[in-house]
Image (cartoon, rainbow, N blue to C red; front, side, top):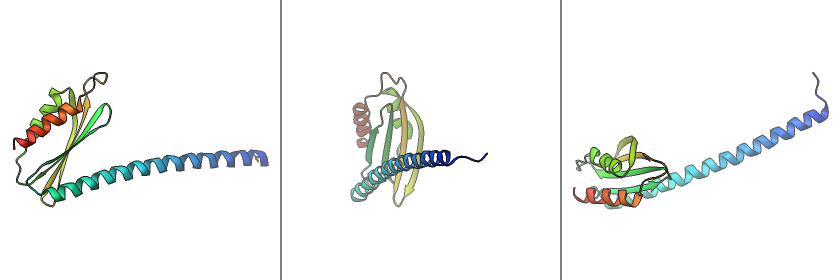
Length: 137
């Protein structure tokens, strides 16, 4: 079928609207990624000044989930099960753990979520207990 000029204009207008919405969505995603990169780079800058002997702990409350980044030196024998135990005792379930080694540092990343989303997890208590654990090493 041959579309009338009005139909073609309507399709073009709808397509332009769709593209604008997509551009806005991509801009939001870019801004979120940039904020995340800035947070990561500022954390790396802080750890560079800390040296290899002091672990660094950063806990992010993401609503019903928590992200923990723990940075230690290669000379620290950290027991990951102790960190996981603290999360579980405070009502969170660890869903993933990863690590990477950069220079003389080990970056551990934990992702946990509340076992009961209605109750949640008290992140200040988790953070306090994790800091006590780190000090004991």
